[in-house]
Image (tube, rainbow, N blue to C red; front, top):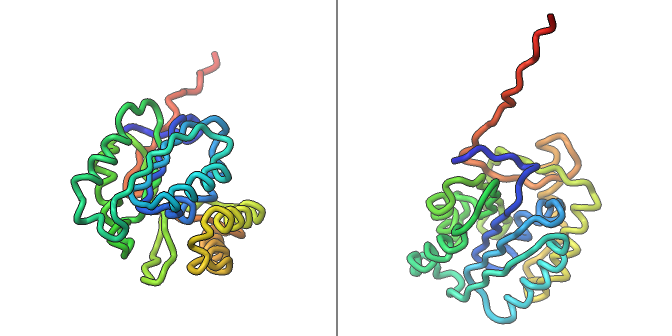
Length: 217
């Protein structure tokens, strides 16, 4: 894995099993990406209706970036039965990347089988990138410890929830503003700020400056 410098990141690969995974887990990060960054937005499942929602979501969360949509229609809830196709999707998404790359993907300890499969395969396809595994609150009750936090101010946290409600009307029966803001508040408390998103980073390379102070004579 090559050293990663966030300020120099020119490419982001955002990966989800389903439309809305990426925005629920990393919407605050998406809203704070540098203008003009190149984003490969990869979703493995979805109907035409759900893909249309994904396009609406990127218009809101990624309007300031250059987005390419990689939307696929593998069956929801059945990705482990299509491991070879998922692996190919990820390998294709990893091809042709240069420079500092940030990859966003589900967490390895996610209880949903679709999320978990992607989390396990991503490190085998993106070996020279910084991979941040996001979390998704849901019925399974699988939230755990995270080791990397992204603080969000209140306006960003509320904008994230607003965009989720706007982009994914088919999922409103599952959405609850208090769930998203409550989790963000809890993660914020854990990193001494008001709101935050939390991620897991399994491996990272630290680059220290090579500059040396000149000795005055």
